[in-house]
Image (cartoon, rainbow, N blue to C red; front, side, top):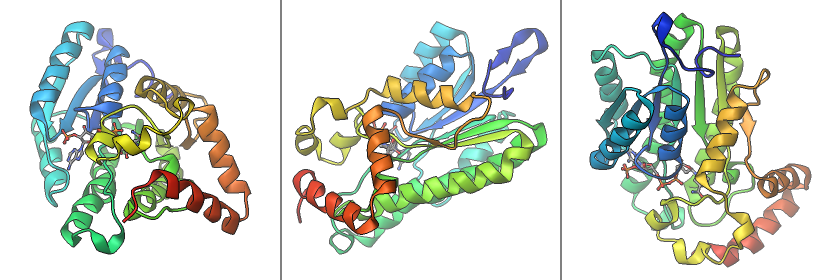
Length: 281
Ligand SMILES: NC(=O)c1ccc[n+]([C@@H]2O[C@H](COP(=O)([O-])OP(=O)(O)OC[C@H]3O[C@@H](n4cnc5c(N)ncnc54)[C@H](OP(=O)(O)O)[C@@H]3O)[C@@H](O)[C@H]2O)c1
């Protein structure tokens, strides 16, 4: 079992493993923080809302006797990752587990959204993920262990929809990136996972303004963040960890159907479904 991702802390030997969670102020990221804390990992939490991070940090420090560092960062800024990593280095912290989770959706067709909005989106969803991996992997390689979980989406496994144009493309990118990084880093004892949740209760759909629309989805389509994160962390410590993790039986079935169907039929199915659930421009 991988040293970094199993028991996290052996105080008798002074071994402490530290996890960095992006987008830890809400939803799936906050749940990663909770479950990693319960496993005894020290944490670095980042997001824009520092007050939220500090409140969570206070709770987790009290409950689990771990150290939690909060660093506010807007990952849409081009220099945000280098500044974040400098702050982590300045505190002489080593990141053993990286959870690339921060994300959101942008409703609209490609040409109906400002270009700067697309740039910010790609910076958060894609470039920050690549840069954090680029800057933190060398340390993991030197230490001979580590883990990266890239929070992608079921949307990255099924054909693209109209509206939210760059969302499924960015998540498909994260899946491919995770596959390559897993292969490149296997020999260094580093595990890389692309986590592909389907609809999950969080603030995501409030932020995108699609809460009313997605509320029409039947209850059985929805997962709790607690379940998503538990499945993800359990998969990371398996003897042969899978790169692709799709929590929920229905989501796994949908992913299999999308992979199995002729592409044109899969595209047609998505066209029919997305007409019902996506906002129309
Ligand atoms: N919920 C779903 O149905 C679902 C399904 C599949 C995949 N996902 C993926 O799961 C991940 C987490 O989403 P969630 O559902 O937990 O949504 P959420 O509750 O809205 O949380 C999103 C997190 O991302 C952070 N974030 C957003 N923009 C940021 C920025 N510019 N800089 C730094 N942090 C930023 C937010 O923090 P601040 O606002 O404080 O910065 C927040 O902590 C995302 O990558 C999402 O694409 C979600």
